[in-house]
Image (cartoon, rainbow, N blue to C red; front, side, top):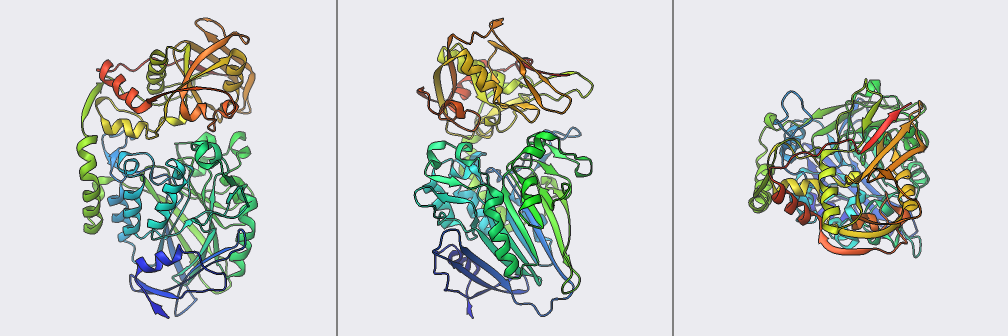
Length: 568
């Protein structure tokens, strides 16, 4: 057996080799000896990556899995504005994660569900390189590929895959030209640590084709997740896996998006049951555990749908990590899987010098620019407003998107403006606003675009974007929208009413509509627009937003009530 360093073994893992070639490696992890086998077949969809640990016994085996998701470049801690007891208390960051993981005394795997870099400036400005550098140092074993890994184009993702000392896993990404799997991702990996064999299948959301800039992935096919996973799950079982995990970036359901969820009380509403994501994978892919991302949901413990396997969701921005324990008491017995969500409070960090010094080195240049104060918010500028559970109606718009939509309309001189709700990635608290805040809110390199749409086209677009109890579009002040929700939690689309300037929107009239370039290019919320002509002003939206803050400071939070949901 050839002894190699961890870096060397990981680099070899990413290389393409014949299916008949097995490269044996060994490296030290804590006090455990590990060997590493890898292969990559030439046949479409048939890849192999195997990590194995030599163990003295197969009795009383245990392995811990740490799971993160949707890091979005949040290398540093940030204020936990959702924490009502102390919204200024800081949470998250790799130093906090390292502090928790370093305390683990037994064998473990550290896995991520994707969308690891695009978001906070520390990740965005380096196009992911800084985040991968820290993930390497942290010892990540594998990561799924999120839709936002494509935000700077496929060549950038290929470069990140080469830099990573861990495999990127995706079993459902193919080239349209010939159906071949992309060669920067492996479909699955098999690990053995602590005497437990764990197979991990990677899955990216099939919505990636429109959940990043469509032009960046137009040459790729994202196969339905369950269809793609099943043969690889079968292969892992045949290879002797005790436990098979789906490491996904698919989402669990729209109703829990960006929410902290008490698993014991979660009953998926119809829109979550119908959503083609982690619940469906848990029921039909044949795995034992789904480690999911994409929805930014944080479940406090493992949860299983009726007729399905366990699911874990670890939230966003490194605010939490799942700690999952796999126990196998005796040979032939089924694994017992338990888990809980750990909050990564920055004030509880035990210093891990090699990680903290690396973070300091990476962030010091960025911090000077990001700390520049450009204005002030008199009140919090949130993406949404809290719903009153006793009220028969609630607002689906928020102060932050309202502010920005109004400015988009003013600058473009359009009749009104639309913006995708999930294009706003963070809130802005009351007080000073710096450049870094704007990168957190708007990490994407979108520009201001203008389209000419009929009232009928606008109505179709709005109807297509009411789901999961929310509106996927936000509007400028010229529009007033109401819609009913039925008792079963579904929107009554026939009840949609849209007023423009106080009068019903005219289906036959042409309107000049401002939006972002992601929407005009046919992004996930706006597929109806993909074939229509548009004008790109080339004005970067983040620059426009920065000028808005400077001009309007101290910024008043606009009133909400532009989009009203009424419960029947």
